[in-house]
Length: 508
View 1 (cartoon, rainbow, N blue to C red):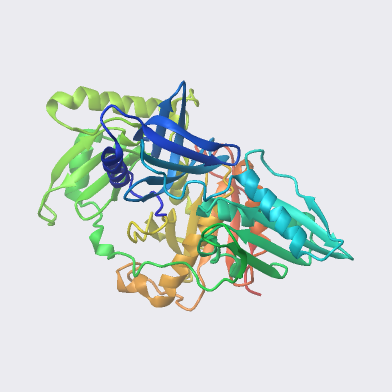
View 2 (view 1 turned 120 degrees about the vertical axis):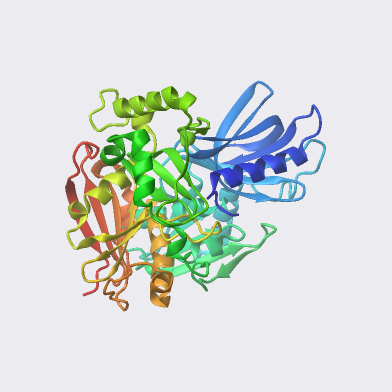
């Protein structure tokens, strides 16, 4: 399924498909599959964008539920959604179809509990007689991943499976395997039993890790036979980064025009970044508050028009006219009070919104805190932009002073998937670095590049926000994938400090 990447475009596509499925005055049929629930019913359904997330809400029959949409697939007769909630602690799948229509593949996918029983029976048949199979503790009650330890005659295997086919669940399974290997370091083998199509989502990562002998199995598309499988390919890569000159930085004239409205706040609190050739985003401590729409001409004298509004928090975008000046000034006053390092009300939505974007802005201003080998003259935020098929972007790219590419990923909250996202971005960046795509497309002009050196990877988070999976995976990286885990102080909004720095996988 394609991951959610462009909130506006994805919202439009899903809303249009929903309208095509709906019948007048009739609810829709929704089937829910999670680790703790499997069933369906008739519900009203609505999609929305709130706090920078695409959500789906279902209500009816005296109950309601709201989920974050992670990825989706548009079929002729149904909508298929991979969803999560509770900060990713619970994930599942929704299938939405017109009332009275047959849900595609109804009953084909077993419930998580049924799948656990099937794999447990399969293990009893496949492992040698006398093997003792013990369930491993589940790190969270709603986990979609199940693990066992199988021991016989001094030989120990770890086995993990999940019935969830979304990439996040597959990566969670591999992460739990890495955690288990910390406890059972003498394991003689690791088995992963994957759902239909699961191999494609998992296969980029095992080659990066030092693991005991790995056996992969994948169930047939009809959830029948469980068959041996093998990693045979890397990430599906988009062809090239976009041309750097398609993202023109703001001109002096444009910055002066913005200062007429923002005053000293523009330089003190804001960053002006190109979203494309024709749009500039004005971000207050990482939170977008306005957009500058450029005039058709691209010369230094061209100006444009401004729209304002905290759209990622659900507010509308409005043109900045004389009559709207009071509302604009009220927005700035609210940002000064609540989107500030010294804000007293740390529970205010403006203070808490998009902490990773705020952390990103702070880190890029204080790059020497992260590593004094990084060159602040060559920083590309949320770049390179590939296309909508790409599964996200690294927070930013830069160079070391020796000309080596560095990929930087930041997390402000504990996230078991952070290490896998960082490795995904590193794989893409390493591919394009080897191919010379960055130079050809206008990045890092004038720099002396160490083109034969593998890119470095940095994963940064507040010290208490590092998920245990990150360190468990980092310890198993093969030499040559140079990863630095860097913990910053919890009060990074006021003053950024490095609290710990651990390096893994460095050559030699």
